[in-house]
Amino acid sequence: MVEPERTRTGVPGLDEILNGGIPRNNLVVISGDPGSGKTCLCLEFLYYGAIKYNEPGVYISLEESEEEIIAFAELFDWDVHSLIEKKMLSIVTVELYDFDKLKNTVEDEISRLNAKRLVIDPGVVFRLYFDRELDARKRILSLGRMLKRIGCTAVITNEISLEKAASLFGLEEYVADGVIRLYHTKLEDRFIRSIGILKMRGTKISEKLHPIRITKDGLKILAKQELFQEVK
Image 1 (cartoon, helix red, strand yellow):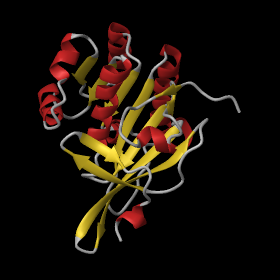
Image 2 (spheres, rainbow, N blue to C red):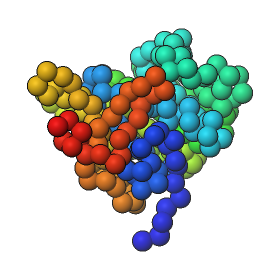
Image 3 (cartoon, rainbow, N blue to C red):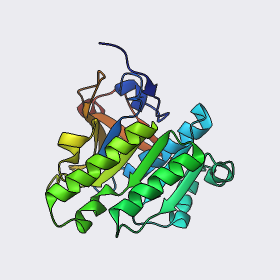
Image 4 (spheres, one colour):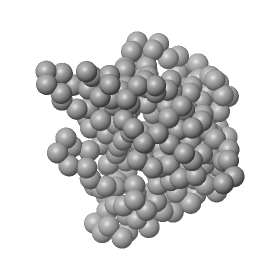
């Protein structure tokens, strides 16, 4: 198999369990329980992409404002203001009343920055704006095709409940090139965060769960440890 060109995430430990990073131009879904670290991981993907690999990124928020996202980033001392001024990062809030408007905004922002990375958060909002599953799949497929055409590695988040893992209209099964699952699991008297790679097209992946730490510097994956080794 030909080794694919990769987008290195820069997130400590993640590239290691992805055998070097996400294959370039892949569309990846990050699913997770509330509090599992999805937003932190997404911001880190864009932040380190800009400062380590000189790759501009776009953050499309379907819920929170730019100010709220910047305030969250500042908890980790990430200087996103300077990245925005240098056109290495764009944070845009889109009210998803019109999926075509979302697509146009994504394409315009990627073109404006010549962006190589995209985050759409939270993708779960898609469910609120489609009456028919078939319509949703067609629109999300068209979004995926557009991202591959313009050459952008993309991440869409999906928040799931603690009881049930709900699919984004088959996005994970049929459209996404990769699925990363973040867990926030209660074990005895504490909660344990962990990560698993459910699939990643075109690359070898770790098939184990690895523990996660959220520190003052951001999210860190303990790639050399397995979850149940860590919690003993």
